[in-house]
Image (cartoon, rainbow, N blue to C red; front, side, top):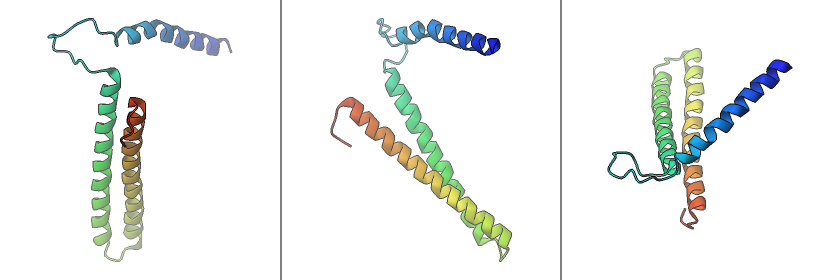
Length: 118
């Protein structure tokens, strides 16, 4: 019990100590011409999420193509055909998740920006 309280105290202390650094990272102190990006943290996170979603979508589509090839070359083997079907289902789920993630990210961004465009 005491170890759990100590761990919670350390985590809370770490959070309290890092919050000022996180807040001051958003303040603009000039810095023009320093080569650093002038974009906000939210736009950096948004671009990172879109990039990751695009990568996830490409991987899912590649997995779908590979599972289709496995299914075509199964040659009547029930084990390989069922493996290929399962891989196709998971690849389709991956594509759907990637597209839903992109749609949700775009919707939240437009809602937070206050625009009616979606």
